[in-house]
Amino acid sequence: MAKHKDLRDMKSPTGKDIESFLAHEGWELESQNGSHRKWTYRNGAEVIVAGHGNQPISKGTWCAMRRAILAAMGMAIIALLTIIPYLYI
Image (cartoon, rainbow, N blue to C red; front, side, top):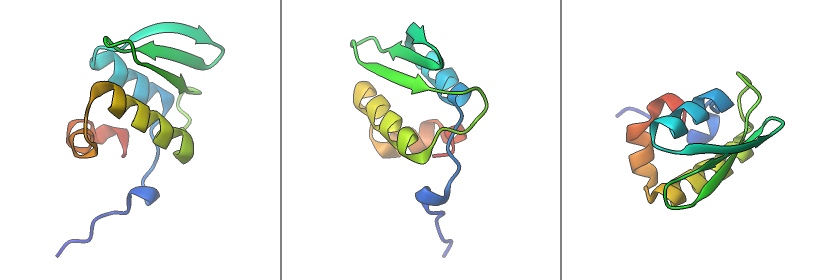
């Protein structure tokens, strides 16, 4: 039986990874203040991506962003794991 990798040990995505996913899924860039970018979904939900280029997002920040994205899109964790594996979840 194969052992599953612990999610806490996986690498966090970069800001560019998250933003490319958001753009692909229909989110729109609303505004920017320094390195913080506000993305809006079609239902009015907002997510702030605090990305610094190709640097990985901290695990705590990524967890909060992931929860907000999932809630806005009405998705379950399982759906996110199957749809966007390139985000190193």
